[in-house]
Length: 323
Ligand code: ACO
Image (cartoon, rainbow, N blue to C red):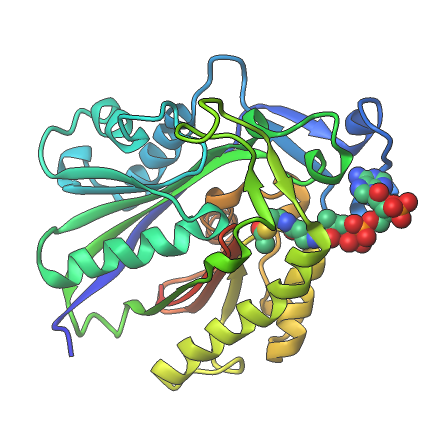
C-alpha cells in the first residue's frame, strides 16, 4: 500500500461571460426550450469570446484553485490538463498555462480522453504524486467545444458549452484523517470510436473538423459503463452508494445522470447537478460541478465524493475522493 495520498487542497472554476440560452438556440436551429430541457436538462451554456482560448479559461480556473488552496504558483510542480480543444495542435495547452502562471520548473502536459478527460487526468496526477515524482499538481479540465460544433446541426449544437475547472492536489503522508484520492478506475474501448468523434484532424484531413455523434448509441452505452466502473471503485474500497456523501458525475445530460444514480441506488439529494447552467463542457464539467458544490458549502472536508465520466472513444472512469 502506498504511503502517500493525493489530498485536494483547492478547487477553482471559470465560465466565459457570454451565455447562450435555449431561446437563443431556437432562433438558430429548429429546436425549442421544451425539447432541450426535457431531453437533456440543459437551459443555457457559456461561450468563449472571440480570441478567448482554452488556455485563458484554464488559467482563470487554475488561479482560482491556487487562491482557494492558499498556495503560490511556484508551489506547483506538475500540471496535467485534460482537453479535446487545445489552443494549437502543439505545444500542449498546459505549457501556456504553466507560462501564464510563471512556473519554469516541473512538468506540464495535456491529456486527451474527451469527456472522461478530467478523471483520466486526476488518475494520472494521483499516480505521479503517489510515486513521489512530484509534490503538488494542478489538475485542469478546460474546453472550448463551441469551436468544434456544427451550429447548423440541432442534434449536437444544443448539448455543449465552454468552461474550465481545476483542482490542486498535494502529496501527503497517509494519515491526514484518511483524506485524499482513494481509488481511480479507467477504461476505454476503441470499437466505439465512430459513435462520438470529430470529423477532422491533423493527420486525416488537415482540418479541425466538427463534432459528430450517434446520440442514441451514446445514451444506450453510457449508464452501463458508468455504473460498472463505479462498482469497481466500491469493490476496491469497501465503500457503497450508502456511504458516499456526494455523487459528482460528468455533466453530460440530466437523464444519463439520473438513470445512473437510480441504478446505483444513490439518493437524489446526494447528486450534484450543474449541467442546466453550462451544458456539457466535456473535461471541464466535473471540476465545474465540484467547484459549485464546494462554494455553496455542500462538499466539506472529510466528505466522501464519487466522480465518474464517460465519453468519446469510448472512454470511461471513476474516482473516489475523501475531500
Ligand atoms: N431539437 C428538437 N428536436 C431534435 C433536436 C433538437 N435539438 N435534436 C434532435 N431532434 C429530433 C430528432 O431529429 C428526432 O426527430 P425525428 O423523430 O423526426 O427523426 C427526434 O428529435 C428524436 O431524436 P433522438 O435522437 O431519438 O432523441 P433522443 O431522445 O435520443 O435525444 C439526445 C437525443 C439528447 C442526444 C440523447 O440521445 C442523448 O442524450 N444522448 C447522449 C448524448 C450525450 O449526452 N452526448 C454527450 C457526449 S457523451 C458524454 O458526455 C456521455
